Length: 257
Ligand SMILES: [Zn+2]
Ligand SMILES: [Zn+2]
Image (tube, rainbow, N blue to C red):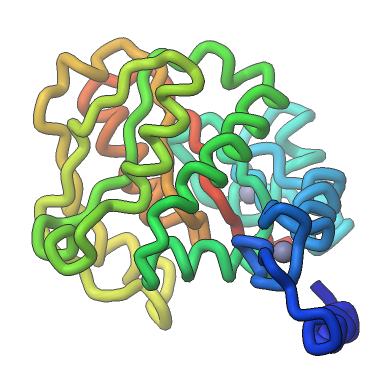
């Protein structure tokens, strides 16, 4: 939401105190539903050009070409520089919107202020994205990105698991908590690409590989930023025998070109 729109809404709130607020951005909204600003942010994102592979918004209109790899025409035309130059094991990643505005506020409330009910609002929005992608229709099982046991005890819940439960229930698919995080990793922020991948190497494992063997997996997380965590989870699932991995997250970052 733009600064002025937010300021105007705040002023209106002062004159006419709201009875109910948007669960994402907190401005007054009818019946406490997601407000029109937050909905519009999602619509705008869905209409912008995306990387065909990672689903991040493309900030550059330049075409990206990889260094000597054989790629199909679609990938050449619609992939971001990051996906062209770095092999990905997941087939596609898609998100509800970018990690900014109302969606960012929603994720913060959900994750850090423990407003768990937000999973019930974000889940259907994830399902909407699922239905707009024909390739996703072949997924057979839903798997959330895990937390370490220590982090799980600190937070009290795994946000990705709550989202995955909503999605699995709506799609009538089995939910398997078989991907686990075996060790704590240092925060990825500020690390270079190689350092990020090293930091995550071996951090995840599949406890019961037969649950994902030869299956098309839908991997769920809250945010796709650099994609390093998602890629490591996808690689781990693929090594454990998963046929293909598709990814759904609430929010995503911008692509690198
Ligand atoms: Zn809102
Ligand atoms: Zn990409």
